[in-house]
Image (cartoon, rainbow, N blue to C red; front, side, top):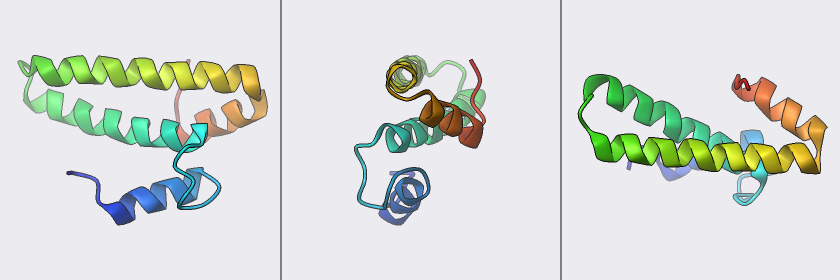
Length: 89
């Protein structure tokens, strides 16, 4: 896979509570964002890869759902993760 175990641990350590905190909303959003960026680069080179395009749309929807959940749960955490990842709505 394009993302090694160490890279995932670094991602979760940076955005979650620690490297083993894989279930937090912030960690999941960061992981989805990394995957979305990777798939976007892939689709720039392979425009007719419709399966990847479908996966990308699905990931964007999952990330949006988590962001909506975080908005309802704690607005400050939502604003922090959006600013940290450079997302916009």
